[in-house]
Length: 71
Ligand SMILES: [Zn+2]
Image (cartoon, rainbow, N blue to C red; front, side, top):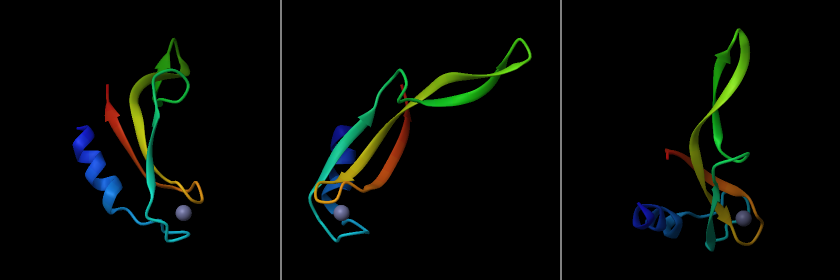
């Protein structure tokens, strides 16, 4: 999986500043993870669903791509 995203990172060009140097970032577990809306005893609740991997421009910081993947 890391190699897969590494390839994507290498061919991503920033849509904002045109930069070609990208970094990979993660939103991992806890607060950063994508939550799935559900209900708990009749009230709205959120259940941890997935982590997020982001392709971030090293020059301007724009998140050019983000991917959700199951843990
Ligand atoms: Zn940029």
